[in-house]
Length: 282
Image 1: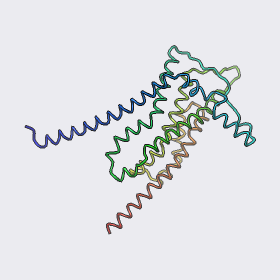
Image 2: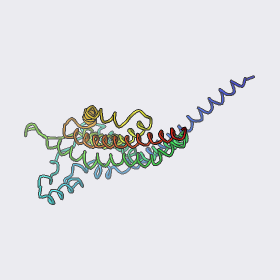
Image 3: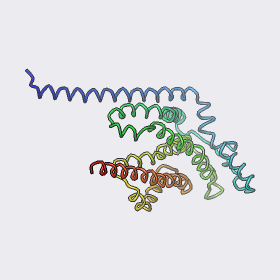
Image 4: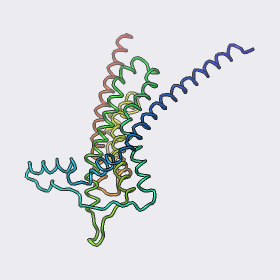
């Protein structure tokens, strides 16, 4: 016969297992969404490769058109440029098939990201206190917005300019630039996906500030260290050239400054709440 303590332990264990089961189903639904969009992307290789992945190497790509229009408006013809023509080869037997699957999966992650995060947030939110729920209102929107903003920045800014730089770079005219499909597709996907994830920096700063781990004073004092870390991150996720590294590092530094502003607002709100509580206690 079980004692009351044993019954309490069993109930606590079941409650914990119930939470795990609920988390499992949230993850399953999120992964199903990624799988569905990945399959859809896999079924349309002409659009995914011909229009999306190979778009930034074309002279009529949106970014190059807008830069050319800006150059005409400013009477600065140097802005009207496009990458030199180069050949993309598949030097491995499974190269095209592997990149077809990989690119479809990355497209599935990008498209399904808002829904996937929404599923995770549905699991986290019920465990928050009322004040925390109020403070994190709109979290799904802001996280999704920053992620998609980073994706668009990576695709329309970082990717075409990096391709332009790398395709035109020559140490000797006798060398011809011919890129492997794995190298090309991996570069595009890395720049796009990494930009989307790195643009979550303000969200990270916000939650760290709410937890009291980060303050605006701390962020300001470590600004120089942050610049070094940002440059290292830019070097890690971009092709091995300083131009692409700066392209990623510049918006990250701007987001770091935005994070200081966000942290300052959070800090001031906490001070006001603390002052109000002290006045009520008196």
